[in-house]
Length: 439
Image (cartoon, rainbow, N blue to C red; front, side, top):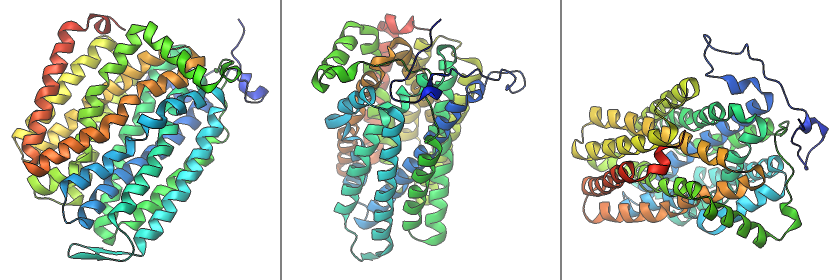
């Protein structure tokens, strides 16, 4: 059987690595994909990038809250706007991922992210930010500019992160590899915000978090450099124009309706779960009456739920079937937000964030695994970008929820959003027969 090749790399890329099947944990397949050295490079890179991402989510939200004297609308919007560039350049980033070397594109993007984080850290460090006021050059519009720039760069990374997984492991290892990749998001949700919250509490400032963010990007650049892609097939995307590439990807998704339905399902986590995280400072400050440390704790608890889900899926797979598991997770996750909004007590909130992280991670493992498995490698960058396109509507959802919280209260906003989402999730369970049949 001929082996797939990578048109952009050396002959080392065409050598298909045999995994060490002895690398199991108590006889379980939990860490099977880490037997592939190229997957280890990719996993480490994604871990560092996600750690930087969570540091920014936590720090920018609290920083805006302090700068604007608790403005709920601006606090929610500044974090949510990070995903807005997906609407404008997301699909084109997918085209790039299919036309050029994915590893080099990811590495260069991370280098720019590191420089940007350092510049912003210097700006923050030259300003004095306290609960009574702010002095120095830092203004709210600087935060919007920073998250917009980093959002554009992360938009380029998003399809690469997913498209590279099938390039470094064989098809049989895909479910395990996608589950372990999810741990890079869930584990850093556990560690990043906790560390960021501690740094803010201990040092009484925000600049150290941005320096640490830059260091994480530099580390990601180092570990991604030796990566090779032995399972990438030759792409002919460069033989056509970028516009033709885009049309080819859209045509494939439209003609394969199951992929289209899987893309549509992601509206729930991207327009409900994500905004809840982004308006977390508002909920913690106004409803729970707590500070940054509790905010970091809740994100970390959500990370515990996510890591637990990732390990379970990596070890046992989806016992109920991948499609059914995704829908059940949507119902459980939206119900947890509803309970949290109705019972604003810290112990209950902690429990609901745990459930939310557990549910969301099942969705974020199962859905892309199905999409990547159903997609040809030549189109994976484009299909991955279409799959993540609805992330671009997250700022609109955050804006609406933030405005609702500002003009009513956070409890009413979360109740309304979670109740509508729960109804949609239950309807999906009843009517989405094609999704329920997917394994």
